[in-house]
Image (cartoon, rainbow, N blue to C red; front, side, top):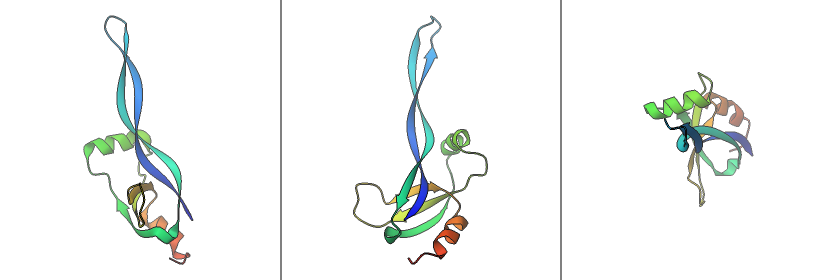
Length: 103
């Protein structure tokens, strides 16, 4: 098993004030992480991931320290979840971690 931090987009709720003093809810997006265990038997590929859109770069700046590296993990198998996930960690880190495993 391989423990990784999956990056996902979550909806956040904030409150803003109108000129008359009343408040209203505003919904936005933020990036967050959750720990995930991956069965290495279903690991197909890992490759570097770069944030390309301006919106995703702005979301990442508020959620992760500058210079954080991301990778895309591709999984095999019939699952209700998507087969690709973005995780925190550089491609080089995963090369070192997985080099000692029998995949």
